Structures are given as structure tokens and as C-alpha cells.
Length: 309
Ligand SMILES: [Zn+2]
Image 1: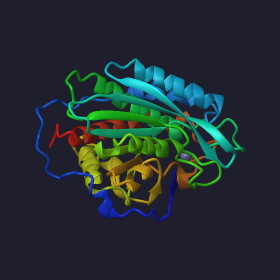
Image 2: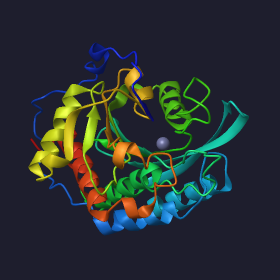
Image 3: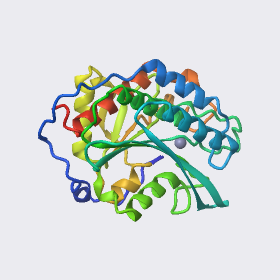
């Protein structure tokens, strides 16, 4: 992701996705609790696959591992979408892992995280524990918690593990966000994007010193749901509004008018020192932070499904 660039998003567009502040309640289905230890173990396992930049053997291995883990959770249909896309280094192969849990409605939520890591010539053994291991671990923990709910949920849940988030050189139409752009393009092609009620992204969610600063250009109604979820869980100090403008995997959705929010803590170490450096190692993140991020995401999902006020 990259901060600081003004993204041409019209807030009016973001508000056209059908979100309402006072939804009608569905019958009560308690919000499950994600398991921080499971999130941690998954993060460790993916972080041990080094390197895993897009197109590397590690990326392919990561996709297989995520698909296998997701497929072991009851109730999910899992597939790997393999596709080719242009990059500054020529055409490359990418893999999105998509795990879908059918709900009562064809309307759906997308909950995403990227699993590829930045290709760093100076750090060939770049681990990417927080960027991207944490998002993968937290997302799998959300999925596991959902899988423990036996009832059919009101909305279909689509969990997407994106490849190709990181740019080789700098973000452009052929560099970076390959997975999320592909996902949106496929939903459009299948005429399903109109059924996408919201998109929640988890990226850099494991910092021991966790404060998810929601980018100010993301959907305000979704932001308020996230912040309320955090407060109700007792994690109010771990989430705040007013984060920097952010280009990330939510951007392709937001550009199409899907309400989207990015759960990201883009302050990683003193002066963001650990971001895209050899400092992004497993000791900088914690099971507790992964659990907090997963719980906030899950409660937000429950509110979007109108299972909670
Ligand atoms: Zn990154």
C-alpha cells in the first residue's frame, strides 16, 4: 500500500452502496470469538515461507497452504484463481485464493488480505511478518470463527487472499494490486459486483503496538461500524479515524462504488522503520494484536449482516 497520494474517490460514490446506519435486526446469532493462538500460528507459518513475492515459488507455496487451511474449515468453498497480468517485468502469473461461505442471500461481503510480500533486492530474505503475514493469519482466524457458527448467515461471505498487492517499482495500472483489480474485474464480468455490500481489508494488523488508523478516504459509515465494534469489544484504544489517504487492495472496490474500509496500522516501528525492511520480523507482532484485529473485523461483519445493532 502507499499513503499520501490523493485518490480520486468521490465520497458520494462510496455512499451509494446501500449501507444504512439503522439497519433492521435479523434473528440473533451470537458473534463468535476469533482465536488469537490460531491467528498467530497461521501468521508464523506463512511468514516462514521466504521469499513469497508474486511469481516466486514461495508465492505459489503460500497460495497452496492458504487454500489447504481454508479448505479444512467447514462450510467454505475454496478455489484458486490463477491468472496472468502485465507487470514492469513482463507478464507474470498470479493466484488469488477465494473462500466463499454461502449465505441466505446472494448479496455478499468481501473480506480480504494480501499474502504476497514486497520484492526487495536489498533484503532477499524479507519475511514480511506484518506485511503480509498478519493479514493472512487474522483473516484465517476470522474464517475459523465463522466456521464455528452453524446457522446459515444472512449474507454470503467471500474471503479473498490477494496476490500481487505489492508494486515491483511503483503503483500504476500495470504494477501492484493485481489480485484486487482482478477480483473486481471478474465480479463485474459476472455481473455480481452489484451484489457486493461492502469490502473490508486487513493489512498490517499485527503490530505489538497496535492502532488501526482508518484511512480518511474510506467509507464513513463503515468506519463508524469498525470504531463502534472496537469500542464494544473494549479495544477502543486500538482503532481510530483520521488515518492517511491510502492506496491498497480496497481501492479497486471503492473506485467501483463499493463501500470499503482498510483496517491498517501504517505506523510500524519508530518512524515506520520496520515497513518494507529487514525489521519486519515475527518478533514485532503479537498474537494479542492479531486477535484484536480479527475480533474487530468479525464484529463489523456481524453488524453489516444486521445480526447486531
Ligand atoms: Zn507492503
